[in-house]
Length: 257
Image (cartoon, rainbow, N blue to C red; front, side, top):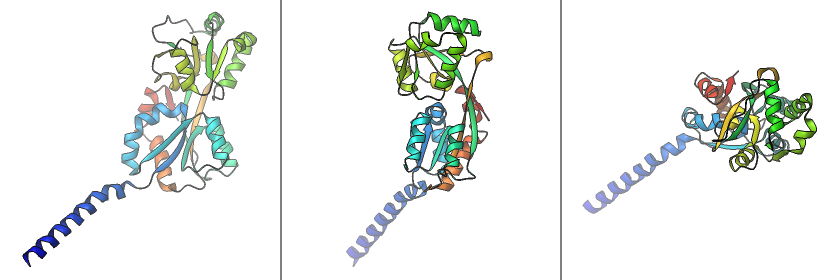
């Protein structure tokens, strides 16, 4: 009898331990899947621990160019929430890929020039100085389908160096690869969003484009029209819009909206 009582007590205790151990995982909730533009990656990486604590859900982020992620969404891939350029979010809303009331404007970021750490910085403080630095450069790089490519090529044309820059531009599949090329010495400068240059290892921000020729890329978020975790997706966007995120945007070279 004593043996049975002891055995039953041990079994009950073991069951309680299993149930106690399972509670945090259950409370954690299901995974929230997010497609996020590379321009917002530095902000997300910094805020991720706070986001997961606030939402009570693990977060699965996939980063890439806005063009690439938009194509995946249009092809029917499953996701819960996305943060892309505002133009892409507007398009996806029209296509019915995002919930009609879910657009959330988050931040904007200007374009900058980056170079290999340790190299001598050129003067780019005026449009004339920037034009001269680009003319003197042996090569530059940026993302083939990056959000700033169209504007940069238009700027080169306005400077009267469109053909020259086309000949020495090395296009990459994303800003990560473009930054890596600069770090390795394969290109002299990278031109892309400031928020993509600042966290890049071995690459230093020369500075933003001069105000007279600066161009800003705006970022917005939206919840999938078929989100499995719509409530958590909306909560994620509210957090990214809130006061806790504002200083992180500023630290990463962005302006909260």
